[in-house]
Image (cartoon, rainbow, N blue to C red; front, side, top):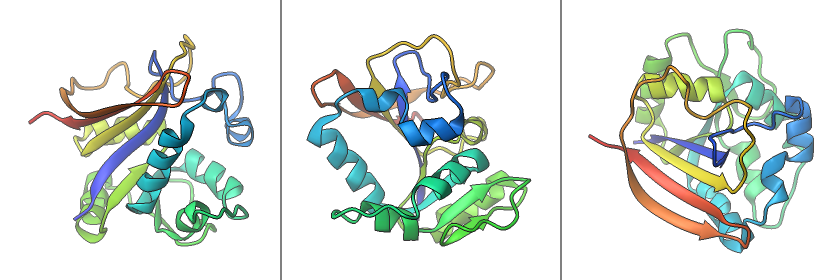
Length: 193
């Protein structure tokens, strides 16, 4: 049985995008998150997270950015191979023929599709980026775990992880871990019952 895990790079004020550039630039430059040292602990956390995942669940914009950036990448740790070959599910009403290896477009009923994935996928179903999708998943109560790598910066503008009009969602802290030298912290939450 899989679980939906929202895994995000986030500023202290909740911003999850690089408001200074277009999405293309975000993927090419890395954005603000890569201006900070997350150390070996942070890199290991991200590697372990991907290696333990059974699938990616993405919105169209994030999917297209990843599909452009990842297919030609290689590394000695196997991260790129895992990322490129694992099943990828895209929530989109405009994308019909995804070309990135092992990609599938989900149907219109988000809750039914995500619950089907939870039944079929072994391991975590990772959601990276995809703010609009995260808002929809959160509103529908479909997120099983939040993994937030919080960077010590306040941007003051940009897309935020949690929607202004989203539902109240009490969370329980299940783990916290400082990583790197710059004050980056990984916070893991689960919904409170």
